[in-house]
Length: 254
Image (cartoon, rainbow, N blue to C red; front, side, top):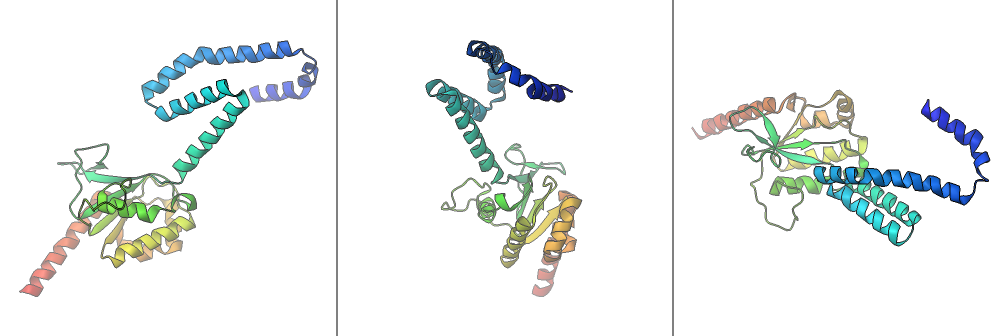
């Protein structure tokens, strides 16, 4: 209802306001500006309380450019920086390293839960968002850094900090969708793991992503028996696989 009344005012009454003196129009802008300044202290306290330093920096830069140059320059600066931040965030998929909580059958992000421990020989990687052509360009390199250092923000020239894993579990429960380009890159990643003797598992695959996995050949390539509902189920399968390998090795030696 508010939108309809606003459109009606713009369509029918705006031509009547064109002859108003600039002083009157300036007073309207001034009143709107004062209302924003009244709310500013409350908004600033909220930003500081939430520790949203990026938002605070953007607000400060916009304010300084507006005061030093013009309102138009401040507006363009704010919009431009916001777009750059959105592009930067959307082109880098968020992945987390998961660890097992001691004494419990739960896996939590190691960064947020220091008590979580990585299972020896097994790396659990959780994908936090949708994968598509724009955010998978450096995905192979990031996964390799995660595999060697446990963190994708480490420079690749450093020496590996953790031993290589024989099993990798991808937790895709928080991945709402995946497009064809990302599925192709995922297929190449699985190929690379297989060439290095690393077994890949998937858990919590959503129905919306399952069709893309099937069409791309990911399910057949990884193996239908390596898709599970929970991380704990995949871990049980890995334990059984390890027991079989130990038994086979012992039988051969005997």
